[in-house]
Image (cartoon, rainbow, N blue to C red):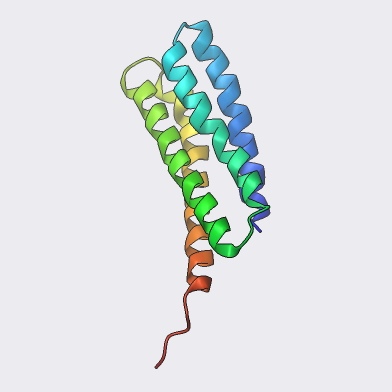
Length: 122
């Protein structure tokens, strides 16, 4: 059901997050690393799960949750950058990929939700 691009991009984002979290853990930033790992990898996992949605409404509900997870990931990335734990250059590629995911998920949810609305009368 989901656009193939969001499947590919959410998986690539998860892979990038895993690599980034490894570096955070080497720097002993365990708590923030765990938060980012949970939020960043759940996006792709649940986009994948949405493929088996039982209805369009179920699909929209699942992708709406993933848009929220993407926003949570953005929060952790910004916190890492703005607190000085990571440099802006370190997180810039992840933030860019994250923003793209947010845009894709939001567009898919909006388009699919609109198709669920009854036709308007003129």
